[in-house]
Length: 222
Image (cartoon, rainbow, N blue to C red; front, top):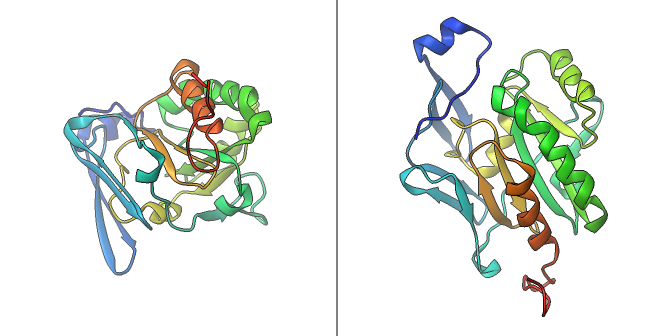
């Protein structure tokens, strides 16, 4: 599966450079980032959550709810306020949409207003959004990115991608943006390894938000 990624440098885009990131999760873990492309099989393992995307699949849904797993602990410094820590546990009882992005990423720039629209439409239904800004060494540029686009949901500032250890040692780091939808028990209900439009995300978020505590849709819900 080839995934276009916009880099800051035209030379980096053409070179297809390989960057090796070393992250620790119960020992040393290696994850290879291929600039401008993603692997055919992307795997996430964290807590009881295990994600496998065979043959370049980009939309993955976890149903029935009993098949879902939770990621590991997830927290990091707030992009807007470096003195504040933002954690997944801050949103207890809410559906949480996690979007991994970078301000230099073309698809991220295209989808952020779409995400804001879904957030505005669903926040009163107990839905929270949390961004994770990765591979951005310029905090001010990232802050300007969200401010200029009037993004009102918080983001974690994580240029080294340490936050993503919550999803295990082999998660789709070669794909930016990617989005996860967590149910009210913070189990992973859906994963999108691509840019999203309102019509892609909102129906999924609305469906998960209407699930009961047992993970089933109320009777009569389409």
